Length: 343
Ligand code: NAD
Image 1 (cartoon, rainbow, N blue to C red):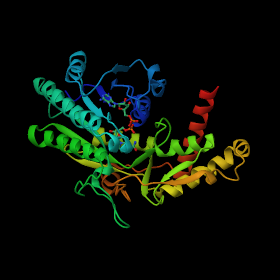
Image 2: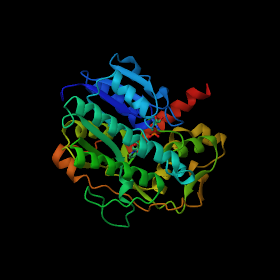
Image 3: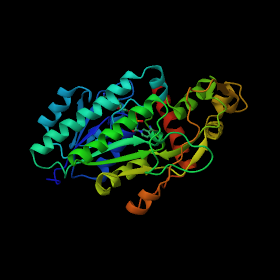
Image 4: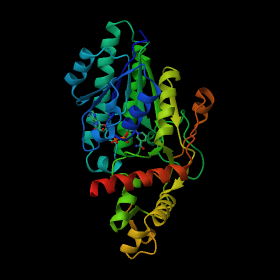
């Protein structure tokens, strides 16, 4: 029945998935958590040290794009619901080589849908057990000055990564319309916080700055993103999974629109404050001196902004972490991580 409390989490060794599992294990003690992750370059068991201390947490190393692997998980466990994070997630990588994005984000999602459908249909619980797909506001395309994406904004993905995520969303929705599967989709803006892979914008700024290397900023640095602290996202996902309306999409944003330049400057100021010794060693008056503009990312979307009216009014969620506080915690976390690594 719906009461089966074994949850399959895919991609739980990555940035958001590992934060989610850690949050979820503490918030709910009546679930078994099965984490299926391929441990690509983006996944790390380091991210799950705290989760591993819980007896109701289980890890399986495996590829969602491999049908036999997914079927084995459903044989070994009676999966009562799925929260699907696993994806190739880095836009630049999708521009260099698209295929892995199709294999994991599209084929992998279809494997999960198909296997869950078969298993849940056999058990007579297809309309009860929930399939929650984690998606991105990038599926909606790019905005100019005004407006924000709502759940009704038509998909208009403009890079291979967002195209693969939009494809997955459409397949998930098709399983609701065609088979009556109990699906829900959440589309969030840019996440930031602990455990994000070093390749992403914020860790890159901090890492380059502390190494005394130039901090690369795409184009004119005026691209606008909305920033959502990862723990705020986790709480929203908990709500959407448990209370979201079947077949619906929920947009999740941080109410923090900033240009990449503003974010970079603010991080440099935090480092100026907390890394004075390093700044002197590097003979810099400010870490901002390291900022360098580099050729823009091809097809770089100008602005993303999320209208969170639906989730705030129907599920009572809103972000609570101020950007200032979230950034300070993020910078502190990376400084600590790299200090430990250097020892
Ligand atoms: P990430 O790259 O940090 O982690 C992805 C995880 O998926 C890794 O642990 C990786 O090993 C695993 N994985 C990749 N391919 C796999 C496969 N074939 N089989 C099993 N596991 C596989 O990504 P993230 O930033 O944590 O993003 C998680 C989800 O959230 C993704 O679906 C992404 O599209 C979505 N999302 C991310 C953001 C963001 O700002 N990071 C914003 C909106 C939506």
